[in-house]
Length: 368
Ligand code: SF4
Image (cartoon, rainbow, N blue to C red; front, side, top):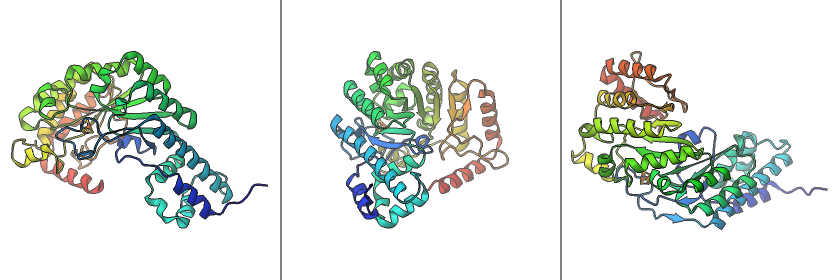
């Protein structure tokens, strides 16, 4: 006869299984409530002048055994949560009612990031995982493959595994290693391209050249990965907007990634770029000037990618005061929708600039 365990004992077990996760994941990995797992901690480069994400935090290379132990904790939590659901007469369902019951017994679980990521992941069907932090491909390929194999064998409900990496790191990987990593179960890379302009790459200390960006991106596409690349409108300010737009289009066209995502510059306090803006060394563009930059970049794209504006900072207004661009994760399918997107940009340029400023304030307030 199965022995009934009190809820308090179950909650105690969940607490004991706690593990650490990182702070960042792409928004497109949030909608599906991806399981977050740390392959390494923080950023091995950590010098980009616009980035505040890991400043002051040391890069940690995690051993395989530590990562696989986290994966085992996830599996144990999954089984524990399912057992609680059955014991409470919820037929194994991972629901809001189950969360309420668990939190009523152990309020601290709400503040346990490991528990929260596992619960949300299960509630969404347990399908996707995101490997953290900034550059998981900095792990030695054989070790990475061992981690991926353990992940796929242990959490069999996973249908997609994705991660952040740097173009520079990809450019250094051998094609055969990339193929084996793909076969071991990694599906998609999220890569911060920012710009394809070599001068600007140097100015912002991105630590990569456009040749390496193209090499890394092409290697990833050839090995069968989905590639999602982020570029940063206004990174070059008023001084370098044309070269930024033209060379970003050149590099993205050479790679032809699956997704191109716009992440307009937001100067973050505590970064060198923020100081540059404060001292007047970098002059930010107006909403219309940013649209002109967008027009130049989009006009130069020769790709079959999906071009996306899935971030609150892409808040330009159309003539009715609505959002100029679709704000979903699938965006505009190129080349078919390129004329439509260019038409939207022309509409945005015909709207009074004050409407764009208002739209941006509105979106910024909503995303707080
Ligand atoms: S590589 Fe990415 S995470 Fe690292 S400093 Fe640059 S932008 Fe930030």
